[in-house]
Length: 454
Ligand code: NAD
Image 1 (cartoon, rainbow, N blue to C red):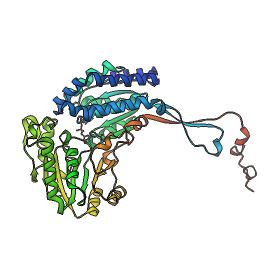
Image 2 (image 1 turned 90 degrees about the horizontal axis):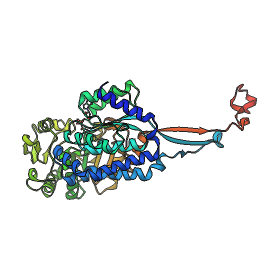
Image 3 (image 1 turned 45 degrees about the horizontal axis):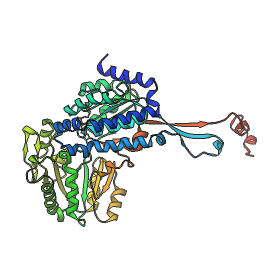
Image 4 (image 1 turned 60 degrees about the horizontal axis):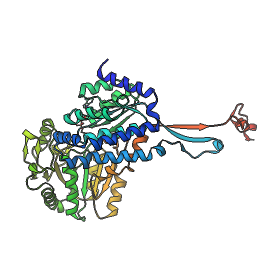
């Protein structure tokens, strides 16, 4: 038996004991997970620093604080989420008991990505535990140090049979994917998303795919451009642009094109000084493969800001590209790096047309003081999430479902949505054996007389 088969078999066997179903057990596991973040923050931050050069504060702000919030929410709401949910009845079931009972799915496979390695791997695990499942956790191999720390720490805090960690790269993930799961929760790029779905189809396993894509950002000429650009620069250059919901590119009218460049430049200087390379708050590209990929996107483009780079430590300065054409290389794939192209459009109509020509994005940003512009964006486009006059923060609202649509993914999570996503919502209708007379109409023979049709 391979290591992967063993982990799945162990999780399955542990699930079959029934212990993951008890609410006490779920809460205990969630509390243990919470304790892990309090007691092991230093080890977590050190590993993230080595992988992505995130500062300790950055690691807390963008990874663990959100997770701790999600754990607290799940602990406080679990009883309510797991309780039977009474529903409206119809005439035929008026005297029956009718409700939805969330029940665990079984063994979930969680495949994480590297860019926020704790957030995107542990957040689904919180949902899996809360919903009463077992889960095999596969952190991204790209985040070498974090994967190792996760593999060491999780079994020290939570039930290691119910929630085993399997590390490894593509061959190990593919071996996992050959096993039978009751749900697969994958975070990563859309191409691999298709590989996951194909593997899941063999066992008819449902999937949640948290993918990426090019998230557009439209800046209206009438807005406070300085504030808009400051918020966009924050959304773009946090984690060096390696954020699934980072604004990928800016669409604006030609009349504000130069002003947008100036304001983004100002914000870069304010956040990361004149020398971002030496700034503790500015990250690094995850590895040389991604460094080369991002640098290749800059070919034949006009750099308005930044562009400096150093392959030896995967540094690419916060960069702005001006006068970018839709056919440019940088517009053909998700950038996932600190490069911000600016494209000009004639106005809102053209911006909407442009957005709708592409795949449905994970996030869509619109900066404007005009509610009508926001409403048109909502009504005339589609995306996983839409945010007006800010970037990224919708991710932190547990009461909003987080997920993509079309090419940016399927299914959603965070807060109660995680619980529901990893539960089977079972329909329960409980009748008594009395009142048989009421049923007489439904039994054959279906004569018009019996039905009251003359
Ligand atoms: P990655 O390279 O870490 O891959 C993700 C996981 O897929 C890893 O665990 C890896 O082992 C596995 N994998 C890779 N290739 C595979 C294959 N051929 N077969 C089976 N498994 C394979 O991460 P990535 O894909 O580079 O992540 C970046 C992408 O993820 C971006 O597109 C980003 O937008 C997206 N993302 C989305 C979200 C979200 O919540 N929607 C969050 C983070 C990242």
